[in-house]
Image (cartoon, rainbow, N blue to C red; front, side):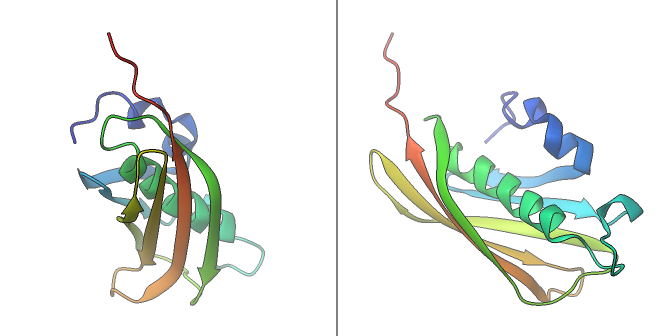
Length: 130
């Protein structure tokens, strides 16, 4: 998927420093270099920053087929604290039908260690016909 402006319009992703690595039908990979602004009071990456990274991959993957999709449910499980380096989120389509689609997103660090697992479901809007 070429960036048709969808991701470039995501002001929050831009604010947090998220960048697109790759996209394809039902898939996406994004990255975020950890900066001081991403840390919580413990000195680790804030759970909200990790969730935002996973959510960005989820949004790209779920909107990759040209049908507008909006999240209706999502959850995340944190498995390991992240402190520095670059974090990656890779989304994969798990199931899709005309109205609903489900995605899993794996967040990893530079060493490939799993930081978090995210699952999300979207409602797919009916395509507009000209």
